Image (cartoon, rainbow, N blue to C red; front, top):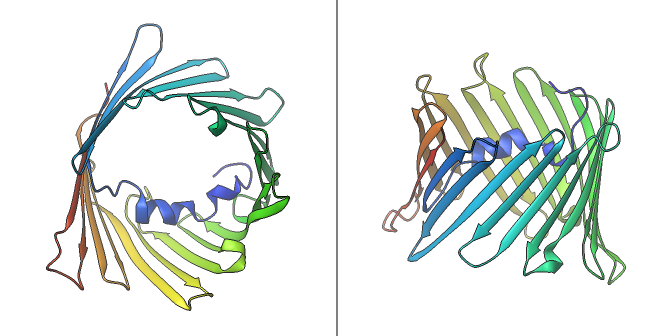
Length: 276
């Protein structure tokens, strides 16, 4: 476990990842290489429906500095600069996208043994300011986050959360959408290596009296293969199979079915990530 409570975005992250991470509905190929100078190059091609897109990214790390540049087929250039420990226990992240300069953002994160703080400011004339803070320990965390619109002088969103973590389980409750939604999740690992787990998540939206309940799990078939499954009360069934074809290279196949409308065509996705 980490030495501090982590950022607010970490609350409930383990359950979210098990239920959502790697589930795809398109075709994706990613190839990574490393140059002699230490630059990591990644080329990605994605086909979604009848539309194909791609990008090329370069990442270079020097001491406490990480530079990430990405160019896509839409002539957009994204640059991210990450600086660790400019001040003790801090991380500074600056991002800029060309030609959309208004999407730039500057974020500062601060970590302490019993607290974590993050603030992000958009790089434009009337920016949105994001703030988050957590208090606690690696096993018990309480926190909140908010977004303030300087142009209108009002809060765009505010969220509060709490989580309890044990070596083999984690429970979290998040109150979001300005108090309109409450989400509770619980994940339990069934083995010491945490490759097999079960998860449950329930979301309640007060304005519509709507409840969404999702259960899922992951199972390590062997050292190279993992299977995942999820089902919600609306009848959406998702399945995923991930296999390490060669060391560090993953083949992922996923699908989603509507069990209440089996006449609909299921959604399928395939992703192949090749790394040296």
